[in-house]
Image 1 (cartoon, rainbow, N blue to C red):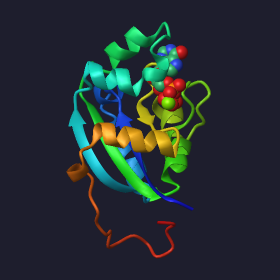
Image 2 (image 1 turned 45 degrees about the vertical axis):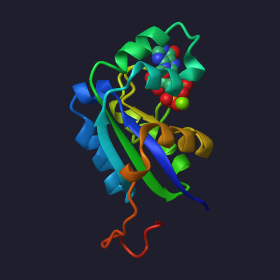
Image 3 (image 1 turned 90 degrees about the vertical axis):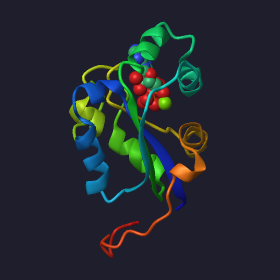
Image 4 (image 1 turned 30 degrees about the horizontal axis):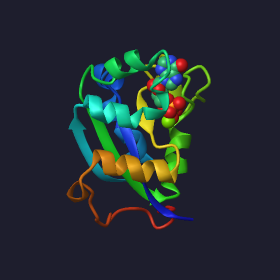
Length: 152
Ligand code: IDP
Ligand code: MG
């Protein structure tokens, strides 16, 4: 079991649909610790880095545009094996394949409007967190009321 941090982005489609609070609540209700959170615009540079693996896809231009429709909300989450756990809560990329109960399964209405991003691997998470957060925007603190039996 590894102590990790991961990155979640609440995408413009979810901001437009006023789902930000519900999405943040999902993580809080699951006992997942928020260690960073901010609203920001995705710059062209940030999108090119973040979606470098998709730059040759036919949908890249549309993806880039849709990620700049509104600001996004970037969230850093921390916990044991948190990268994998948040991916499970995120659900499949395609909403038709995303299981009910997952965030995408419950809220996503198209592949390009699939509500959130979450880091795919611990390596990806490290690189993405560095890209989106300065060191002093990530916080170390104790939660007082987390139940004794919670995993973290
Ligand atoms: P992931 O977000 O589940 O990790 P990736 O393959 O890394 O999926 O793709 C990043 C994002 O690019 C997806 O979340 C989605 O918004 C967008 N995307 C991926 N495939 C398609 C597609 O076929 N059409 C339109 N957008 C896509
Ligand atoms: Mg991905």
